[in-house]
Image (tube, rainbow, N blue to C red):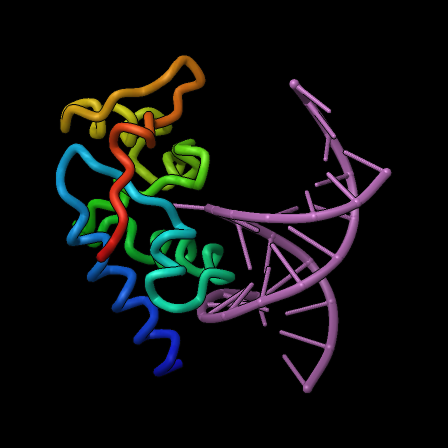
Length: 105
DNA sequence: AACGTGACTGCCC
DNA sequence: CGGGCAGCCACGT
């Protein structure tokens, strides 16, 4: 558990560092943590982080799709929140990664 | 301890 | 171009 908690803690730290108006992907977070195959686990961390005040709405899948929107108060809250921060969406309802993708350094 | 599930990703058909 | 399968990691039952 300790190892997992550490992983979760790192995920939270990275997500908390995402600047407003920017987004990152599960894969990038996982890769930054040294476990690029754990993108799924990152999503699990977000699920546990939902409601903790973490800007998890800035985390999208590698296609920029808001796959985790259903974890919010509503299926559209995530998108509205991102729009409020100045994030642009394409016709597919996905975040324009080319313009807003942020990678942990 | 084992099985099932999930906010992912990549490869194959 | 779209859908399906497999691999990975952690959690809940």
